[in-house]
Image 1 (tube, protein in one colour):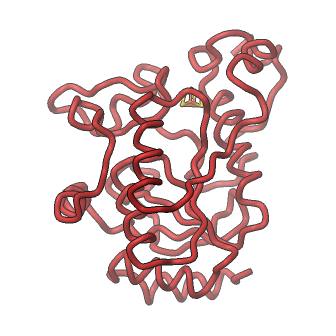
Image 2 (image 1 turned 135 degrees about the horizontal axis):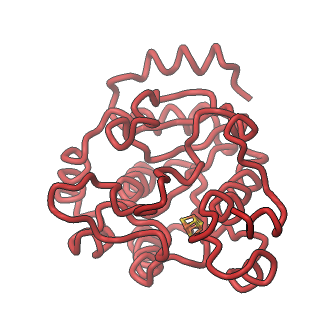
Length: 248
Ligand code: SF4
């Protein structure tokens, strides 16, 4: 396990380096105890391409909430075929039907934070246990929360190193890489969905709207909690009872 001092020093050294360099450093420092969590955004597809292109010994998984778009499931299989790697599925403990049985139907409409906790944050916490560092595809210009992300940082929430090779990239950088290297991406991007999550919480954006405006539209929520910068308790995000969820 790295120390925060080591991670801080690496962040300084790696700032401005290419994502390929950052990934190579991460693999050299942490493999085999390093993993990449992709949600199949264009950024995630770029990192899958880089990991495969440079034969880096980095585990790859996705959080399969059971509520992804058919196009996302198809892209998952396409990436595996194209790059000859396995992208592991990490599932919540409750199926969609099981969650409805315990918490009631459409929890994402009544209590989206709790739904994300059950279907994304808790499974991610389980998935990261046993690893010393994880890689994400966040960029600083995506949200205000992400604007202070460093290339390497200590993840207070999950208690391990966090590597963000694309932190300094813009959406134009991503588009250019996808175009030049013919990286498969989700066809929904071309239909007005710049950011794609679960089906019930993702809509297309209108011209002039921000790229994440279609996520949790009208629900006052901008993040699923995977990249929050404080421990869970600081956000009051702990798994509540079904009764609490019904009251939310
Ligand atoms: S994005 Fe929506 S459906 Fe998916 S886990 Fe979060 S609240 Fe639930």
